[in-house]
Length: 137
Length: 120
Image 1 (cartoon, rainbow over the protein chains, first blue to last red):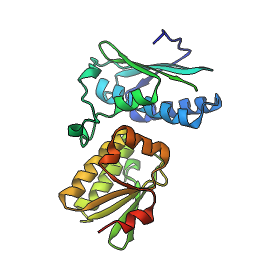
Image 2: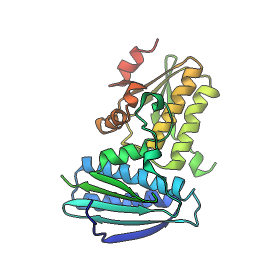
Image 3: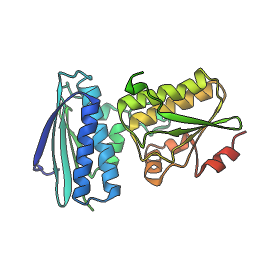
Image 4: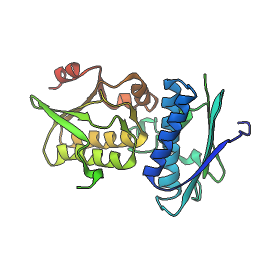
């Protein structure tokens, strides 16, 4: 993924309600920039999953820990970086949720959805930074 | 009752089937998902319902955490030898079930009538 230019940034506490508010504002911005509803659906889902990972798994829901979000709603693409203050993780350690033995596990699908709905999705070692890009279409 | 404990599902009885509709259009928020899960599980564990149909007609978004609750609900229903079916899932959300291959785990129907007809 080329080094993206982030034009907006926000720092939020590890609080799901604040993350939800950010997502609503982001969706409004995508609508104003006339992204298609299909693309917005995917971006919303992917960003939701990234923020849940950052708040719940990265920062362990500790409200004094913060999540740094940098993003750009561009003419051709949307880019976002989500950074938590946790120790990180190796995404390769997450089992394939579509494997028959994992199908009925209640968790572990977030990264699959992020990778499916975004054009690019990568975790920067040690894994506490998630960078995603979605081409507009 | 705190805001998070508000009823997040509606239940209508159609014969012996509990037909559940969701109050939230977006089942994304962690706290809501937790409450939705508790209210769904209570149908089985407290009210003893064995035939449950989840109607997603009003639902526009569903996160992976919500999928997790559905999987746990499916296990709860199986434990009591009941039946859980899903219906009226809009195409964008059905795609999420396909991506995660959960369309193979759940019995999913186009509409409520089809689903109701298939309860034994």
